Image (tube, rainbow, N blue to C red; front, side, top):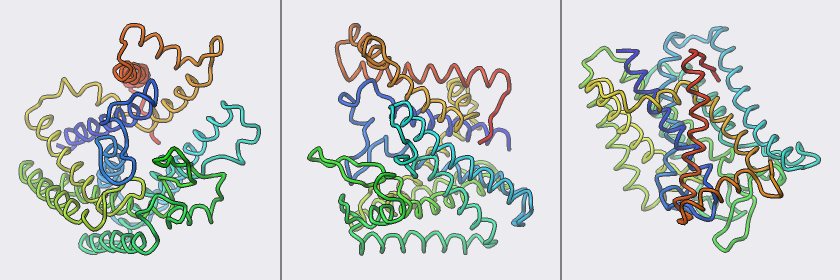
Length: 371
C-alpha cells in the first residue's frame, strides 16, 4: 500500500503544481476567468486553494520522509533539513533576481524580493520539521498547532491584521525587517499600490500549523489498519476542519493574503477531503489512466515550478519587433479565438503543455530532481 498511497500523493501534488502554474501564467492579466483569480482581500476562490494545498501536501509527505528518523536528531536529519531549507530559499531568491536582471534592473540585489512562495515553503518545512521531531506525543503537537493559530488570530486582531493597509502588522513587520525595496507591492481596489507581501514573514506562522495538519493526515495513511478505515478518519477530520473554519470565519475572515487561521482550517479541510477522493479513486477503484499527466508533474514538482518561473520571465522579456513572445503568442491565439478570456486560458494551458514536455522527458528517463 505504501507505493499506491504515494501514487495518490504524487497525483495530488501534480494537480496542485499544474494549478500553481496555470494561475500564474494567463495570456493577459486583464482577461482572466473569475475562478482563476485570487480573492481581492477577504474571501476564497478556487485559485486561493492551490498554494495551501501544496503546503498541506508537504506535511503529508513529511510523515513518510521523517518516519525513518524516529524522532531522533541525527546528523543525516540535520543535514537534510538545513540543505533543503537553504536550497528552497535560495531558489526563491533566484527567481526574484532573475526577473529583475531580465527586466534590465542595474542593481537587482537592491530590489530583490526577500520573501515569496519557495521561501515560505522553506520556512514552513524547517520549523514544521523541528516541531515534529521535537514533540513526540501527537496530542502535544496538536495543542501547539492550536496555540499557533489562536496566537496568530490575536496578533491579527490587535495589529490591524484584517486591513489592507501599510498599518497592517504583517506589513509593519516585513517593512521593519527587510525594508520597502525588498517587498512585494500589493494592489489596492482603487488601483493604487502599497508595500504588503502576501508571503510575509509573520503570516508564515500559520503555515507551520498547516504543515502539521498535513503531517497528521500522513500519519493516518501510514497506519496498519484497513484502508477504508483510514480514509474515514481523514474524512471526519477534513469535515471538522472545514466546518470549524467556515463557522469561525464570521469573526476571523477567510483571507489568503494574511493566511488567516480560518483560511488554514478551511483549506486543510478541502485538501484532506480531496486526498481521500484521490486515494479512493486511484488506490481502491484503480482508476489511474486519467491521472498519468498529473503523476508525471508530481514526480518533479518544485523543479518544474522553478523552470516554469524562468520560462515565463523569458517569454515576457524576449521581444520580436518590440512585442514580447508572450504577447505575440497570445495575439495569435486571439486571431483564432476572439474571446479574450478564452484565449488567455488557452495560452495558460499551452504553457502547461510546454512544461509537461519537460517533466515527461525526465519521467521517461527516470530522473527525479529532489528539491
